[in-house]
Structure formats: C-alpha cells, structure tokens
Length: 586
View 1 (cartoon, one colour):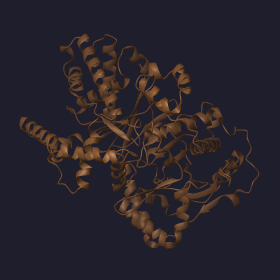
View 2: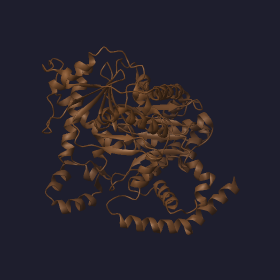
View 3: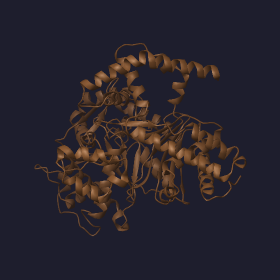
C-alpha cells in the first residue's frame, strides 16, 4: 500500500510541476480568449454527446411532482391540461426575457431577505451585481434554459447533436406507443385556449387503437451508433418530415394508461418505463399516469438539475395555484380530429428488426435494476440546523457509515454541485468521503463503545464543518474534478500523450464512483432518482426535508439496494441517538 501511495504522490508532483503546469497555463490562456463561455462548457458537452451507451439508465434521471393538493385536480385529463398550459406559460415567460434568474446565496441571512431585495431594485443595473457580490449573492447562469423547449438530442455516428427549433408551435403526445401532435401556440404566439387543449387531450385519451406491433420509441433506448444508423434508415424510408415533428415539438407529453402503485413503481415508471411510451431523446418528457401522478424525465446533455428543478417548481406552483381548468370545466366544442394529427411511420423489415432487437436489449437491462427507498421521520433540516449540523453532511455521513457496515470499506463517492453561479457553468464534484467521515464512520460502526457521546458528537461536527467547506469550494469553482477533466481534454485535443497521473490506479479508483449521489429539495418534488453510474455502484437520490429525510436508491445485481438502505436507516438512527445524547444500540 505504501508503495502505491508513494507512486501516486510522485505522479501528482510530476504533473503539478511539469506537464500539468504547462497544460494549466494553456487552459488559462484559452479561457481568456473565450470570455463568452466557460472553460468547462465545450468539454462537458463533448463528454455527454460522444458517449455511445444508451442514454436510458446511463444518463437520464427523473424528478416526480408531488400530487396536486386538491385531490380532484389529480384526474389525468385535468392535470395533463393544467400542466401543459403551465409549461407553455413558462415557455412564453422565458422567451419574452421576463424570467428572473435564481440567486445562489452564500450567506442567506444577509442576502436572501426582503430588505436586500427591495434595496437592490433601486440600484442601477450596471452596479447591482456589485451590491449582490458584497453580500455573497450570485445570480445563476440561465444559458441552458433555451434548450428546455423544442429541443432534442439527435443520434449521430461518434457524436450526437443537440437541435432546437424555436419556431415550433406544436406539442408531441405519446400514448400506448402512438404519436400525436397538435398546436399549443397559435400563429401569433399566443397560448391555445385551455379548453381546446383539454379537448385535444380527451380525444387522444379516447383513442382505442391497440398498441403498435413495433413501437418506435424503443429505438431511443439503443446504443447511440446503432440508433444513428437506424434513424438514417427511417429518414431514407420517407419519415424525415414526421421525425422533424417529433424533434421540434415544444416538449413530449406522455400519457400512461395505468395508475402508480407506490414509490418503487413510480421510480421504475419514471426512470425507464416499458420503453414504448417515452421519447428519451427529447429535452424532457412530462409523464402523467392514469391517476394523475406526474414526473419529468430528462435528457442530461443539454443541461443540469438546476434548470429542470426551476421549471418543475414553476409548473407545479402555477398548475396548482392558478390552474387553467377545473375538474368541472367542459372541453371546448372543437373538431379535434382535424386539429390532432396522429403520426405514422413507414417501417422497413430492417427497422422492424431493429425495434425488436432494441426491445430485447432494453427489457434485459431493465430487469437487472433494483430500486428501493426509505423515509426517515425522526427529524430533518430544522432539527439538524438547531444542532449546528449541516443537513447534507449528516445524509452523506449516513451513506459512508452504511457502506462501511455493509461492505467493510470506504469507496469513491460523488455528489453533484451546480456551478451555475458562473457563466455557462455546469457542475462540480463534492467529494463527501474524507478522512473525517472515515474516522467518524469507523467510530460509529466498528468501535462505538470506545468513544464517549461527546467524542462522537465532536466527530460529527468536524464532518459537518469540512463538508460545508467542500460544498462552498465546489459551488465557487474551487473543486478539482472539472479542472483535471479539462486538462485531460486539452491534452487529448493537442495530441499530447496522456500524462501518467491519469493512468494512476488511484485516479481510476476515485473516478469509479460506487456511491453516486445527488440531492434536491423542493415542496414540489415527491421523489427523484437515477441509475448507478458503474455496474457495482449505487445511484442515490436523496432529500433532507424540514422534518424528515427521504432516500431513493438503485442498484444492479453486484450490489443490494435494500440492504444498503437498511444500513442507511441504522446509521441515521445511530446519528440521531448520539445527537440526543443516547448510546448507540448494537
């Protein structure tokens, strides 16, 4: 072990003082020449768009809405109409330049106040940024937002392409594997009346056609080069104009024909479904089940969770507080058979075979995915903040304890952090596994009787303090992951041999993220999730709410999500016992 460590140290020092130093100098110079963007933007797009694996499970996550507080509004037709109208309202606000940026508050006590917001309104726009800077409040970059609508990821050989058609006025609706389009904006750019949208959706819901024998949507689950080849066959076979309608639609609304039965079923349905009723390449699919359960499934290359969560929050708020229709509303008397176009595709034998093969592959991989969840109700954000503990650090510490208990070791852990405080910022990695969490986890799991309650509390406080530091550094662009990624990308672009640092087993190990974690907390969100990023990993979506903690975990056969969650629950019980001054139960 010592030899490995010494070798890694040598590689680090050699990189820092040699080729790494030179690459960094070139990166800084390149960044100065390209003030219009971020140094990470192009490499990050390339990373996503050159990936050849299926985007389903490997990249696309989901976020599920909470139910409408008024239960009668959760009727599928009512909710689909209201959410569609609210989504198009958001589109119009965005395109009119009226959507205010969100603000990242490093010191919320000073800047996230009504007093500051009132004062900053009277400061000239040329100076307002300095006022915000003085209190550590940063407006977030909004460059990703335009890709929310009328956008799709087109499969291409070696590198996919993101396309957006802002002139599009139609909505794409999927139901039972069938494709429908109708206009939700008129020729003047106004929203079509809600009662007309309701009528068109009712018309689609009343279509009793059997599911197609060869559901086209399976092709979007394929390996990207395979899909690119099959898509070209579709285009050559006379489907180009029909595909253009799919690609350019403002978004994809998926109407499912079954109710959701619990959170595990919800996660499977929204993360991958059965492959027939999603167009996974669209920037997002708004999915609404027969019981009104709703979620966003989104493609990840174009943007990150910050933009999607903002959209989700606004749609939830608008559709519940200012719904376009009520359950008593009657659909407009309009000829939906003329307004709604059902799309048909000409399929050759080669395409039919391609769809059948895609289905087999999709079904096989989906069968291997396990998802489970827990809800821990002893406390949440409010309680932990009173103890002067970072709520996020407590959740991350619980994951470290759980893995140590289940597998007897500490492993590479990834937590996503937005860098939208910077122009064209994407994400940075928080590295929650540290010497502090390792020491604390071992004390709790292996030797609790050898430490006093006060010592365990002190270790938790140290973990919290260090995790807070890591989070602030990541959000302010001071993490190391994206920097090293950009230097590696630059070396490849310049034809420079891969520096030894990147070949070191330690670098490979820290980027094999067995615990891949992401958190989001919002009154609009019920649950969110994603698949593991490595075969022997866990995908951990979690949220620390005001008074409880939710955790949604996925795994493949190499790991056991249910057992891991049992260990997470045990870890949280132990943490809360120690906070309460009680001994850990063995």
